[in-house]
Length: 352
Image (cartoon, rainbow, N blue to C red):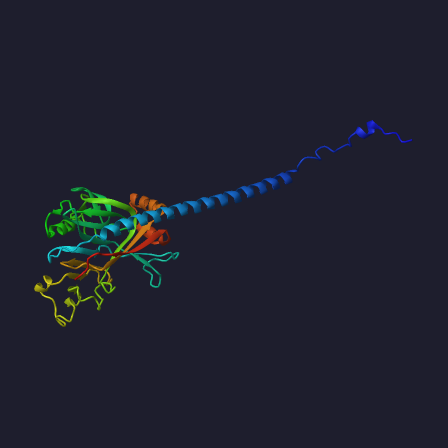
């Protein structure tokens, strides 16, 4: 009969020393796999964070641009006519030559054939009335600076990024039936030089309030009642706009049906309600436009370009380090970091 040996069954089989442990090669493979997994997770986490930060920057730029667009358009919509030949109802000027942007690696904006977007800075002034008082209001893109004689002053943003400022005449034309031309004169005296900041012509920061930083494009284009852009080259404008155009071919009246081919004289200036002066011969849209008497455009197209916060911080640091040329070159390559907003602004009173 078979007898079960408890002692034999409890006896464990003999093992060689170290047979149940991991080898050095196995440990190295495990650590390598763990390292790859950690790096893959870190890379995924980093990309997720970058995407989140980029999305937050775009949302911030979008919200800021929309708020500025709504504020400016709502105020410009209140433009009124002064019904005086010596009073400016609306005034537009392209103050700076365009700065091109593209996203082509290794290309410069001056290369022919490279697609560009031209950023411009326009000055806009308009006449408004409220609480029985006439006021002059203006919007302009400038950059703060220091002046030895004026202290805090404002210059033109030659490197491509500036701050949008709102100007309002310090004294209103209260209780007068018609506005005073001194309102517009105060605005002109406060502006710095159009194309270069000179110490003797820097605008004072008085009467200017900051609206938004990081502005790379501010454009205002006037259109007549027929939807025609009121530029130097437009030939089919509404004849209600009695116009003088000053360009390379001399001074001409519009409509031409009034005086065929005749050049304007000093007497013509008092009879017209719109004056167009070609400001930059290389760009027909860069004009100085003055609406007087009973004339304002039927509507304005407002374009606004806002630089995203991360790119703005890098740009500002370059400016702080006296790297203006590098900052401008940096901006020219950041077309994808600019949010563009457009809005059509109808005006309540037009040429009659």
